[in-house]
Structure formats: structure tokens, C-alpha cells
Image 1 (spheres, rainbow, N blue to C red):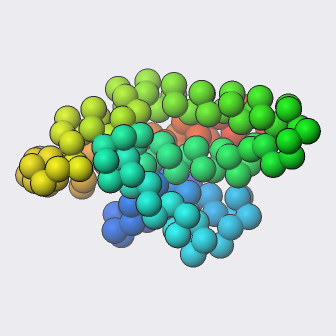
Image 2 (image 1 turned 90 degrees about the vertical axis):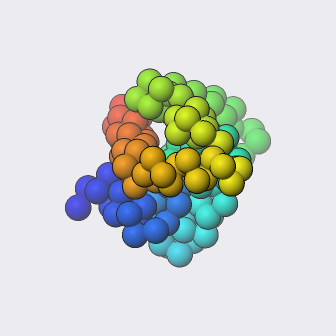
Length: 147
């Protein structure tokens, strides 16, 4: 099973988009599945406010774990993290039209009306799995180019 298939499976099984993307890379990030699911738990639906799409946030968590700065003296890792962050945001925006959940879905899921609209339009079942897949596609490209 590819990471993309695994991520979509996590999402289709009921996890948030952020959890799905991060958990599909748990092994590469040095995390257990449980840790990845917990870390990603509060980022779905743009942190439940329609902000940065959780799938994109999950991908950024993966990139941070792989390339993030942890030593203040290591400026190179800071620059690398900034670069992969910008590439992820740009790539996700190109693939999905935006990186903001409310813009992609066309509604504000932080409101009852927005959630109802998303459910009526079947966005969580039809559009969101594609966003998860797109996040992994962009992520794979970035990781592949860095290797």
C-alpha cells in the first residue's frame, strides 16, 4: 500500500485529514501510529476553524519532523524548513486552488450552517479524500527531490 493509499484509508476510516497524512508517515517521522494520530488530532478542518487545510497541516508536520530545526546554531536546517514549508503551501495551493479549508470547501465549517452545507454537498466524503491524496502527492515530490 502506498503512503497516499494509506492516508486516504485513515481518512475514510474516520480520522481527520491532518491525522491521516501524518500517520501515513509515522514510521518515517520516528513516531508510533498512536503518537502521530494524537499529534495530528487538533488540526483537522483547518483547526476546526476553516483555516489551513488539515491535510496540508499534516504534511507540514511530516516535513518539520524530517527537516525542521532543533538546534538554534543550525541555521541551515531553519532555511531548509522554511523552504519545504513554502514549497508545500505553494504545491498544495496549486493542486487544490487554495490552502485554506473554507476556500476549498466553499463554506465555513466552523459554523453550524457551514458544516451542514459540507454534509449536504457530501464534501467530507467526496472532496476531502482528494485533498488528503493531493497533500501526499505534493509531500512525496518534495521529499523525493530532497533525497
